[in-house]
Image (cartoon, rainbow over all chains, first blue to last red):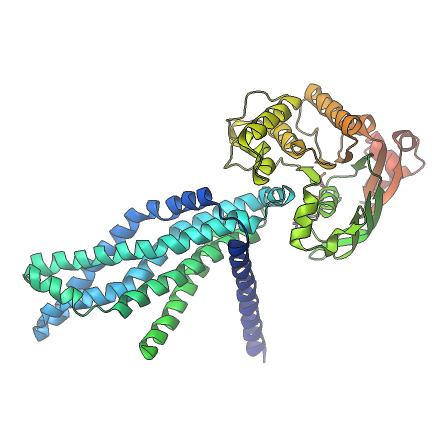
Length: 258
Length: 248
Ligand SMILES: Nc1ncnc2c1ncn2[C@@H]1O[C@H](COP(=O)(O)OP(=O)(O)OP(=O)(O)O)[C@@H](O)[C@H]1O
Ligand SMILES: [Mg+2]
């Protein structure tokens, strides 16, 4: 009885949270379509969110590609199928690892900084001040961050996919001795539109999660510097969980539906 | 005219405003005094609609703002200016951009914004700091920059949260003069929260004391000075011994 009621409470809290986050999401969409778009703010955020995340995204996906190729070589050599490493790397990168790893890196980097910035604004009453100056905080703060993340995350994912495949190529061609032309062909031949599309679709979902959770946790911040620290951690943890969970969900949907 | 009718507000189970009533006439300067933590800032935030009361109404020129939509509220806020206790300047923007923020939001042209920003900064004694960031200013300078931002749009109602706290005595008097001048020249309705009794007597047309979630006395500075209420008496005289401290 006690365990079930406690579990029920947790579940209720979870749905409450998701409800509040959804409200912020709808409000963001509402303001995005009903008010003027702040081009400068969006470009500024795109630069902060996208361009400056590029190095770490490239680094992560390059190493992932290399590791992926090496680890599968270990298996594939036993059945003399090393050729298929190219296809394996290409498919894993575009369908799964590119979008997810990029999203996790960006959640850690960008989600945290969005929450820290908005959280600091909240505890120093800057968000209140924004309202008194007749500017809507969602329109002014959330919409540019949301749009910038939704545009930049898929772009970063495309880069990650390519660099990951390049990492695999280095291993395949220089370590395992697969010829250049065969490796390239084995990379793009099995790749279909739906592989790339499903990867990018997921990265759009992840971008929504990162930006909305980042902003929501920022707005909810209370209690000075300590509170900012707390909500920043929370924002990253919750984004991670939601990214992994929604990845699982959408992978299953794509697997069964297409 | 601003009518605050029976508002209650609590945070978790801490009751801050308890059926509070207060009416502020158009064109008057109402000073709200009270102990630290008694809810003065919370009260100001209710008047401009950043906080919503648990119950009760805030009626501004006949419209109940607790029932307004976000859009209506935004329109109404164009009439308001507010100086926050901690100034609340946007630290990603320069002082000039901070002061001209609402004008820019309302898409005034660049030259008009610039000249108005310069004018407002000069009024609060901060010439030539347009390009600095808030983090480069002292506390008192930030407060004054916040004041410049609050009055930049020529609002009809200005809320000042402790305008003279953290400002040196000479500048504090200049701030008082500014409040009085805005009041006289533009017939602005002002609500001033302060602990500083000198400033309170100087700028007020009426003074209200907030105690335990209610307004316990309202009157002209003369009436307040000669109050019969022992609580108000202790507060304005700044006595350590008296009914406020005895109750704990
Ligand atoms: N957002 C909030 N969440 C929880 N409690 C709050 C919040 N804002 C204010 N309070 C509480 O309300 C009470 C009144 O706070 P308020 O800031 O209005 O005091 P004040 O009268 O302005 O004090 P001071 O003169 O020191 O500025 C305090 O006890 C404070 O703890
Ligand atoms: Mg206060």
